[in-house]
Length: 285
Image (tube, rainbow, N blue to C red; front, top):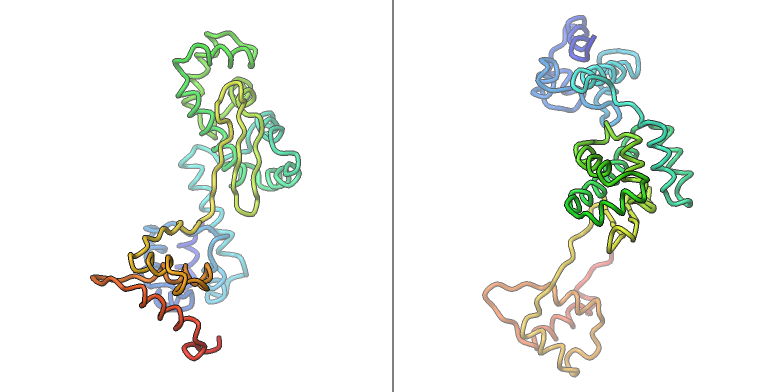
């Protein structure tokens, strides 16, 4: 049973057409057509409200289409990956958690256990792997570095070198306890994450890594703006009789003014400042 089959049966049962369902679900008829013909995979239930709207329109039990869609997506994932992603090996997860900042650990562990191998666990594990693999790749030909890693992990130099080559081919679906003991444990001192912004900080072993703190941001930030002062603005700012009382906010406003093919004078900026201060030029918000 899949989403398209359930929908088609209900449409036929009620004598309805795709366009009627599209109107009820507030999507295009083309979208419904692609969904019913299998050209478009059913969306993840937790990321859309379309199933609630279609359940109501097709007089299905609440949550029915979401349940079918979730099952269909999991079956597709099994076909693509061979099996549904499972939680990390307990020892691997415990080592990763052991490196977590104690102040954050309780909250992170709760998320890991509630959502085994969910988005947070994959994010943290992937970033730890990325950092350590990048370092291992960079130092692969550095005998001194490899011998230090071998000493810290209790292995021979030769065994460590072989492990590096194998480790560089691993991913979050296949990371092993051996990988952790050989690399993650000796190289990573600690890590911390802000669960509100997902900003991640990784502290590496300072015996092995100069500049041993890595930081990653996962929120959208406004790009820092850089303003090039017009010659007239520079002259305005250098003349206390014109700009002596201008506040930083007012100067920032004047800096954002753009001109094409013209060069305003210092007097222009003075008049613009007075206009900005004149309450007659503004209405109450």
